[in-house]
Image (cartoon, rainbow, N blue to C red; front, side, top):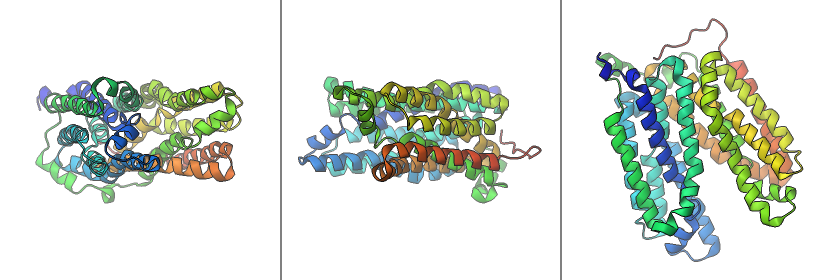
Length: 407
């Protein structure tokens, strides 16, 4: 094989393109948050309650279909190539985002948001490509960098959605997002290098899947870990503004402090993801995963006892630092625990598990907060994270276990 055909010779360029593509697609999925109710009203919904309801339906629609189809796209990536799935996702998202800007009514908006989730999956596809085309000793670091791009997109999307519509209009904002994703499509098509599939590799991938995994315990543990990470991040979302109102004496500062609290954990994760990934490449992915879960559990307890808003901001930031290493290590463990032909499909299940946590977290947090008090949300989440850490320790392969060579 020539150097030009070897994906590991171009893994840094592949990583750069995947980070850019993941960042732009996540921005496109989240930029409508600040103006979504305004767009729903523009599309003909006038009743206040209906505007709120349709806004929630439209926003959640993308993540629903993304969770449902992530395993399918991962499996197809195993069979037909990871780069092909990235091309499909970037082209599909570019078209879907542009069409959202041309919706005539709220039903079309919801349908197009469902379509965006169905056709998307660029960030999860990037995880598969980076995990399999990066040198084994740099996997967790590379996945950490990719995770930074995804989280940066989640933070940047609402910011862009706040200042761009007054300049180009709501519909123009969607068209601009589609245009940027089209640039990611071009970069993916012409810059990413993937190892050509041999006939033997193609046959092996066709026999892959869940049944081909020799030891399923580590994989199940990683699915649980990914779900718990998102649950821990999202569990306080329904109560955060009300909780902050108890800590901040000035009513006019409540929303400002609440916004900072919500962003603090994401900022911490952005700063720590690549560093913890590099650490995991040195001391082992399992050690970092278990340590991060236990550290986050410990940091959740004092969040239930804070007496000032700045204390909650500091603790959420520290928790973000601890959680930043989880997703890169989860993907790295899955890569090293499953056969080559199963990697994409299992990483797709991992993505779906994370979406389950993202949906379950606010539901659990709202229920516990409403029935047992808001401070109980932090304690209950701490118990779940500690249990996940213990489960990870029990599931950790013992010394002498054979690791699959999926490089």
